[in-house]
Amino acid sequence: MTNPSGELGELSAVELSGLFRSGEASPVEAVTAALSRIERFNPDVNAFAHVTPEIALAAAREAERRYLKGEPLGDIDGLPITIKELTPVIGIPQRNGSALGSTSPARKEPLVVRRLRGAGAAILGTTTSPELGWKGVTHGPATGITRNPWRKDRAAGGSSGGAAVAAALNMGVLHDGSDGGGSIRIPASFCGVVGFKPTFGWIPPAAANPHFELGHRGPLGRHVEDTLLYFNAAAGGSTEAMLGYCPSEVPDWRPCLAEGVQGLRVGYSRTLGYGHVDPDVAATVDRAAERIAGLGAIVESVDGLFPDPHQAYLTLWWSAAANMIRKMALTPEQHAMLDPGLARVAEAGRQLTADDYIEARLVLGEVRRAMAEFHRNYDVLMLPTMPITAFEAGCDVPPSSGMAEWSEWSPFTYPFNMTSQPAISVPCGFDRAGLPVGLQLVGRAYRDDVVLRLAAAYQTAYPEPLPNRPSD
Image 1 (cartoon, rainbow, N blue to C red):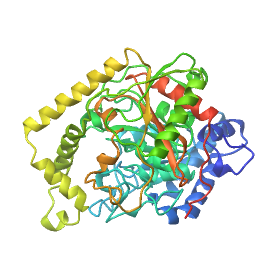
Image 2 (spheres, rainbow, N blue to C red):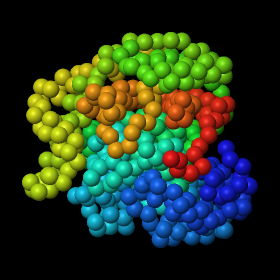
Image 3 (cartoon, rainbow, N blue to C red):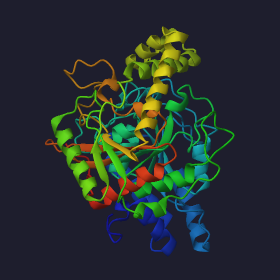
Image 4 (cartoon, one colour):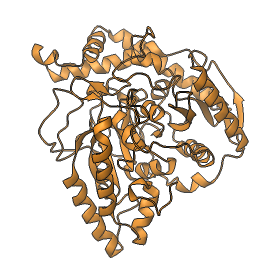
């Protein structure tokens, strides 16, 4: 953690919350500092779709009055946060990363935003996403390129790319994201921040989501304990949820972060038995595994847990893309305005049959069964978040890779959308080019606390640096 005596804009969510309660800092000061960082840094990285100083400062002033009365709404009251632009926020146009997005302020917002607002969060604006969140990088005809804060010529990842960049540069202290195949964890790994995909159901999905249980919601931030503040405010069952069981009591897992990892059984797989991992990434994650063993966990090598479910995942993903594009009822002129890659996968999804979809669901079931078997012996699966570090900005796949789909270069993220398990990416080092590497930890469903414990213990023992400013 940074020194609380330092610049207010450098502090974490937990630190700011404590300073608000003690009266040593105010929400208005914190929001003003965050807006200043956006003004300084965002022109270089394009992390924001919309910046809303009036909305943020109004919420901060209300929070300040509550603190003066000794009546804060909770731990995120007055904290400067962002929302991913795929989510409607009252008063902000919902662009969806698309040239076809709305230019009118939204009049409704989903439960997750209402919960965050209701807990007093000050929304700085919305962060960039590729069109409809369709790929693992954040660029497109309507949005331009969102750039990596460590090297502006490299991709930020996606689809929560703007959120990850904003987290890395502390343009706000908590950042809402969504993850249908890695969209929180991919950019977290590329940008060197924490990205937490909770168990499906803890945070209710939107009432109409063609991704079904693939589509998770969760936070990105600089620190594991910060992301838990978002979770505590956003989690809980609701009749608005289309599907996804959520226990009636949502635990506060903050005390567990200090419990340590002694005796936790961790299965470590470098490749899942089918991936190809860059040597720098492999060496960095191997070192992280040794460090976790040194913290007291029991670490054993595992591999070949299940065959690569890539084709089944594509069937589920492309089907959802086709459904979304069909419902937009586009004219030929509007269809021509889509990101060409999105138009291509939507057409591929349109060609799929019901039998294709059922076969993909059967594969999903097999992956779930395999992970249930794994968890008979292990508490956590540990593996690289990504097999590579950030590649050239503006490309859907690494140049000269021969790959056609974004999911080919992210083989370790989408399986755990299929299983609905909690998964977190925590920074664990850098490659020889100075680009971040992420360590992914996957736990049993609804035992997010174990994943968070391990991630927090690792980050506390081995903190990684963060960028001071966007770098060339």
